[in-house]
Image (cartoon, rainbow, N blue to C red; front, top):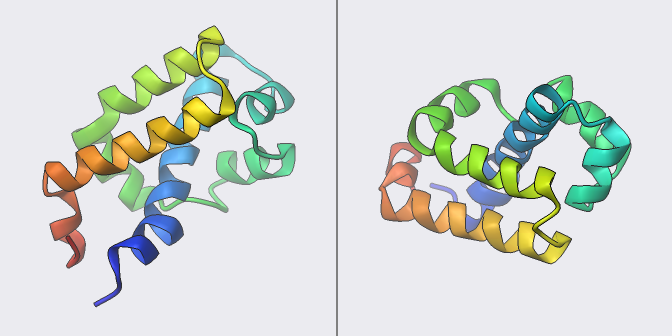
Length: 111
């Protein structure tokens, strides 16, 4: 059994980021450079999220069912410019806390 922090940093956070990136590009038609600036990541990282080199597709499908509204809300706030990069990080943490509260991590054998 892996520690929860290892699961989150290795699988969950990259998948959440991929979901936010895809939403910003698809719904808001932001460029990869714009998304990178808003999220505090590099343009190549955005490209990798879009091409599924980062994040897990199966996990993404599962998370969309349980926290999809929270991901869309985060993307909405990022697109509107309401959030600083530090605020984005805090929102990632809030989403992970919500996942733990909902028992989502138990499905991974952690939490």
